[in-house]
Length: 142
Length: 236
View (cartoon, rainbow over the protein chains, first blue to last red):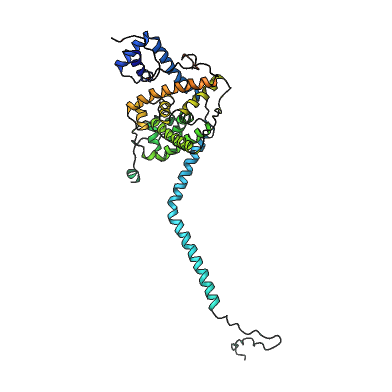
């Protein structure tokens, strides 16, 4: 085998994913080949660069709270979604009934004759006599 | 009666208290999340264990902290919503990283189709404009210039620490494809790194090699298309 064929295995070897026999052959080659050692170091360098890029990343203090709040929000909206099939038609029905009631009332007030009012007494005129309360006969006097 | 009828996809176990939550394995915590009594504690423990790594993965894929936080939070919410259906077919980390990766890929697609690339921003936690910070910028520029498929495989391996089998599960790829994509991803990373380094250094050649600390320059790629020199060592 040549360097080129070993280099195909370097990535898997670095990840610990090269099968045993090939891994042992590559290790033996790495002990004697400076070129492949440099290649290996370069691949390790890539890993180091990537890991270093996020090493100083800080999670914001409210990260957990934001997730948990959103999760709670989802619970509420799910519950609301479940309630909606009942509440929405009821609200619509109530509005329709209200509108119908208003229309009927308007129709009736327009078409019915004006209510007949009792004649008002003229000032200083006749006034009906107060209702005569029948008196019960009192106890007999001797 | 209700207890018997309620579907439980992971094996039932005793409700976990605070200390037990902290020492429980991920699978136990997943089971706790499916139990109404301990769901909240189980989810919060998983959140505290994995928020940093989920954020780091999202950050590497998206290139800025704000987008990464949004994506990581969205991923955790999706995890919570999908928790009742989780059957323990994969490790929690594999499952989470798959969701983070898919969330980020969707955002990258949207960003690429809707808006020009934004300027790269430094993470809020970066200390000083040292070489390390510059390397961080360079790394993110390199990652953003890579194809999303290669980038995802490389980050799941290096940042997420997933095995090839787990990456294959997470991305729905054969293991052989993961292996070859990782090799290609490293070659692509190295090529882009050296190109960008030359540009930022005013034409200076890539220098240095990997050692105990990350090297600024990476030796020219030894991939199939490179000018790798055979050492002449023949395997017997």
